[in-house]
Length: 268
Image (cartoon, rainbow, N blue to C red):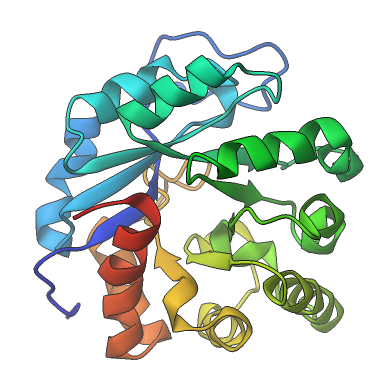
């Protein structure tokens, strides 16, 4: 049975309607909708009280559904946006006021990560860091080292989704955590312990231990990845929450579910 806390954050879920069109070139578009109320109905059984809505890749920079969702309950919800690096300051201020706390870089399927290390993007990281935002990064399996140059020397906190897509292969693991250690030596680096099923063969308990060694227990989070797009079959929200207790000790569970998440996303 999962440990019970007074407050806990699901730091990674997606909300989207069934009929809003996907952005041109989207890799996929679910045929169903993911309603915020459906997500929240799952919270009670898992002890969750707060959540972070992550902009889905198939809506691109059209953040309206995510913004509407978090604006409806600013006490319990925060957002992660997808934005063009040339977005103006007024937009960033508005997004911050509505509860956005991060920029999402979904790099799955992106051929060349070097784009995100160009001056245009590095200037953007500096701009959003002034708002107290972090960069949330989702990479292809084993490709975390390729994004390292984008953030080398940057002050912006980095959160790597889904265990950093480190995988299970020894060479990939070594390269991933060498890059994480270098980044963590100069600035805040975080990991979401979530969605191990997105890289078959990985061992979440081992990955959790590697991340704790690399960034410490104050820089890990948990997310459900609801509604598990592309991996819906057989998922159980409560069981996913309970798995965290199998990966780390109770002190880290408490830190990941509330202390760390509240600090990063500004929950009180």
